Structure formats: structure tokens, C-alpha cells
Figure 1 (tube, one colour):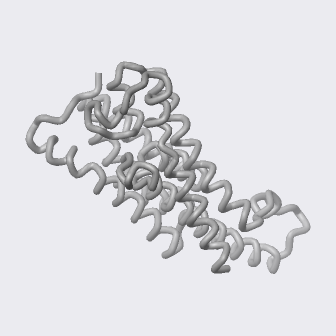
Figure 2: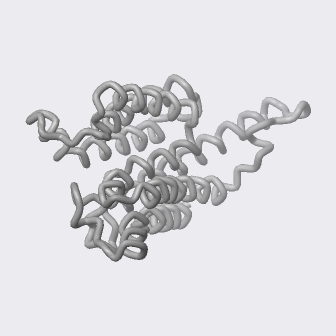
Figure 3: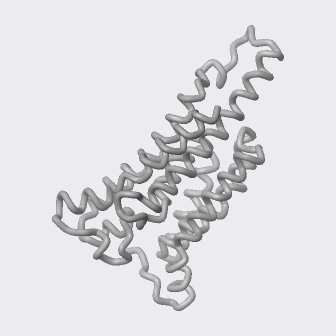
Length: 224
């Protein structure tokens, strides 16, 4: 059990720490994205380099590494599709073991999501100075609680459409997401799972501390 946890932590962190935004801008534009705009390696700052194509690629790849980390955790826990869709011959005893296995799998998946976000925010390859983890969280938690993610993304879109502040939309979505998980996905109603989801959301908000200061000062950049 301990070895599985360590494997999930290490693999998820390393997946999350792949700095796609930095690599793409360096390869295709010969620039260091950290020298532009906010100095962030995420898709929003990549767009500030003048390449929307690279920004979209960064967004998709960052989400993909979050999804991959969670998918790996589910796979390592060996939860087959039959557990998700029990057949007509499944007994109550079978269902009890299925539920227990799924809770363990979701705990491992939430841990993988958290570690992938930490890897993105503090990548070992860039001296632990990375992004804010929003796209990674979308990919990771899309594999854990897709309906809750839809709620968070809907609020993100509404806030950005009304204010033109991507940072504010990201923080609102992050804050709402744990509550949406509790409401939309019973398998996340576990103290360990919810603690990891809440910690992930708090990490995103904390990584926006500079944006919070600029929002309060009225100097935050608006999305165009």
C-alpha cells in the first residue's frame, strides 16, 4: 500500500512538472515565457507572447498531464469497468466490496490530482517556479468529478464574461468546486478525498495572491 502511494506521488508530481508552456514557447519562438507578462508558464501568459496557437496547445497539454496522473492512479488501483457498472448478478456483498474499492481508488485519484498540481506549480526543472495549476486541475478533476467540474467551469465562464478577469474566474471556480463535488458526486464524500480536493482548491487561490493584490488595486490585466 505504501509503495503504491509513493509511486502515485512521484509519477503524478513528475507528470505535473512537465513545463509545456515554457517548452513550447522556447521551441517555437525562441523565447523564455517567464520573461513575458506575469512570468507564468501557463496558457494565459503564453497567449501574451502573441501566439494563441501555442496558448491553446499549452492549455490542452497541461490538462492532459493532470488527466494522465489521475488515470494512472485509477489504473494502479485496478478498478475495472465492471465496478462502475455492476451487472444483474451482482450481490449486496459484491456491491459492498465494490464501494470500498472505489473509495480507495478515488482517494488515490485525488492524491494524484493534488500532486500533479504541485508538480506544475513547483516544477523541479524550473527551480520550483511554475504555473498556477488551473488547467492541470481541469484535466485531473475532470476524470474524478466531471459534473462538478462543469459547474465550476460554468461559473468561470460567467465571471470572465462579466468582468474580463481570468484570474477572478479561476478563483471563483476553484472555491466552488469542492462544494460542487459534494453535491454532484457521492464517491467524493469522504474526508480524505474532500480534504485533498479542498487543499487543491486552496492551492490555486494561494497561487493567485499577486492577482488578488492587483484586483484590489484595480491594476489586474483584463482578458481581451
